[in-house]
Length: 425
Image (cartoon, rainbow, N blue to C red; front, side, top):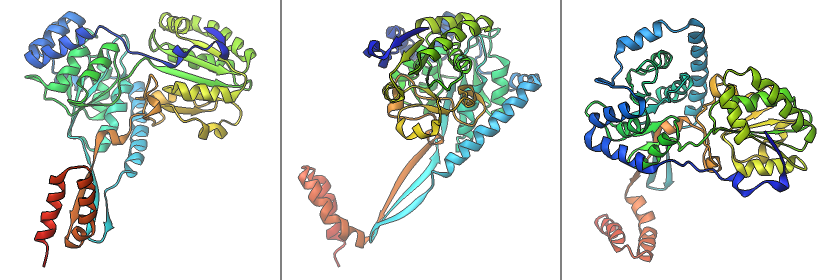
């Protein structure tokens, strides 16, 4: 892991791009729109090396996966589900229907209703990302979404990993398809003979999935266009180097492109952390991935003080931000841009990934400058209603006409005028 001084920090550090062969993404999406199931099957065979005759997972397979789930995992997932539900319900309480009189005769209202149908994408690969099922599925259920379609690539014995199916059963998701990648995003967005289109797509994925979501956004809603996962730790000389090293490695093992960063004014701490990483990585089962991430993306930045560290963090806007400093609470109001913030040495980012109740679907690549993590509101529509009587018409009509005339929208002005004339005694 490189150690650099702040004066040698390049502007490229603050930039992140999601790059892939976009022609492939466009081609797959266009073919799925045109040929439906046929194209889904074609690209599942091409990319995942699996031939499907039916990509809907049947209820018996879901039930069997749940019944045979490891009991310790089942207990852990139930606890995580309970905590996510609790936090989601607390968020929901902040979003209420209301009605307010703006001026006499003018009543404006807000109503909050759930989305009708959503899609959840759960990545495949070597390990089943059961947490993604909970993080996207639980708030959807709490919000009141009636239809949830889940897609995951058939990379486990030509089907979906049973732990993903069991987690879906635990959450209450019944509509599951063993398709992944670009073709899954296109199928969810536009529908096929088998899959009914959704109104919004949630869940992480690789660079091709991210760019597929980018292309279909607008035709459907999406949660985020996610880049490589990130952690940025701000630490002073009071921090424990072994804990910092462990957290950097925990993020590094996600992906060879994961971005682990430590910022500290202590060169002594930096050297200790680097030494700890070298020691701890030897025992990681995910050593190959973590080593690549640490070597190619990892960096320790030496600042003159914590003020500079905070300034860098605000510019970087990391997905996960840890404060391992004395009195971390006093810095909260100075930190503006992050997906989730973790305070003190006991608040490991892994708790945010799994069991604390926080949602782990978070903005990456600087998106934390304009948005936060997945929220219950992302599964809802907040709609407005207006009711005006004759008194309200007299109160707002003239000023509305003035603004419409200034903009040259005379039809708008006339639509008010005709109402005022018809309301005359």
